[in-house]
Image (tube, rainbow, N blue to C red; front, side, top):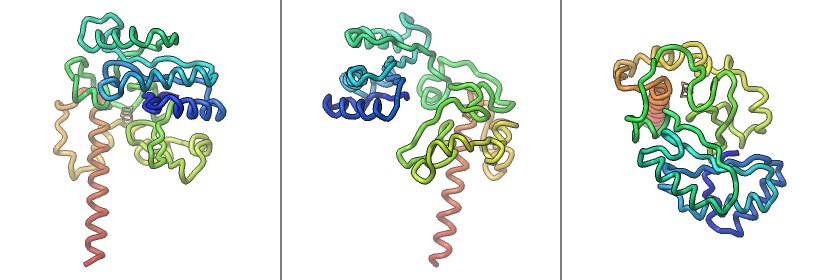
Length: 236
Ligand code: SF4
């Protein structure tokens, strides 16, 4: 499990939760600490979470660290990350270092660090995980229960269906969005939504994931608007 460690706010509560996670079978915990996460989360929270996880006996507890270049990199963010890891050194756990993915908020806030790549072709081997759609390696569970294989790409709801069943029955061919993404990529999605396709200028996107999340955001907005109009029409 990857976590930002915000549940480490209170030490006693962190220990209670860590024990619960261990008793539920959790064996690997990565806690995100770097210049990007710690703009929003006090350092004490992930520190308490890590110490509680080690104390609870979770087999492998590591820092999960995103860098732009490397530890010791000359840029402002990597320098800050070095400092954070130094502060956390006494916790005594290893750090798993990986490069910041050209996806999500990073594309808005630090686009200058990423190169433009082709928008054409299916989703395969895109960041942050290889083959996200055909062979997802990780999931995110939203507070509402939605189980996502990528940004807001839900394959079921864990409050309605057991998580194990959602995972074992997943087949990218059975969902119209994942099918299009696996076979044609985000350009394929755009082709199917002619109502707003014209407002997407390809030159504005850095890579497939950038285009993909924006197209899916537009699709969600369109669906919400249609639902609202339908409800309003029925009410009159
Ligand atoms: S954002 Fe779209 S293209 Fe990128 S990995 Fe996720 S599903 Fe694939």
